[in-house]
Image (cartoon, rainbow over all chains, first blue to last red):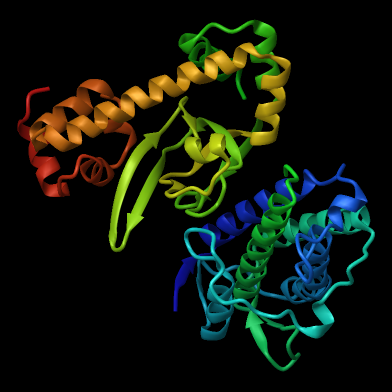
Length: 186
Length: 194
């Protein structure tokens, strides 16, 4: 399993999270109709994608905050666990941006078709600022955090961060494709 | 950013093609500073480049991967521009990545901001095509050298064009850049007259 220098891993994740935030902030002035537009039937709109990501942030930001605040000092190295690494790898698009394994979102993470687009965008931005603060804490990344699959399955905080961000990148690419499909410059 | 740095950057920009102060001011007011650790990927293969960067501190490289082979296309260092330029301007996925070799401090400008500033200051577009022509010339020259020069000639050319790189960039990266192994590079340092 990959071993990371903790500061390097967090540096990379913070940069990735910031780039995602920068991108979504550009949607601040986008109208509700555009945000809710589906590129084709049963394909998610930008708002649905962001709401799906919000679901994960609502679940994980609080758990990460709770477990990290109780954690020890950061170790210089973080060793990824098998499951955490597996989930992260599953999320990553291939080098040309193509998503390899299409998955269905879990039932409770599937958003409605008609959402309050601007509210969803604002919520995402709020969660992302929180995530950036979490990534700034010099805490032990090996502390275990329960997953949304089951509270009995726990991943190390470092892997949780890696998974969350890979997941965001995957879906952001999806949202950008949706925008491109109906000709919205984003 | 220090006064000195701002002067350097303005000089760099003007040196390519003189711009009105108000245009350079528009750029300077929009840049945001970014600090990034070493070995951080700024733009991955497959991502669309979102930013134009100016390097304040540190070294970055654009790397193309093919199977288990890697090639450095370009190094960037103070006060050059950085960012995957073809991906940025065409808004197409990058086919190579941009990463930091050392801890870096950069100024970033989003694609959106760049387009806005060009809309308000059309002369920036002239500057942009001159910058691109310059990059293209350098790229073609490098292609010629890679295809026809001997190891010694490539070494000499690199050091004549950019002598400062010896102090800035770890030699193993320079060796890879000119397609020689590190020990050959060290030997050439000792023996080749520049």
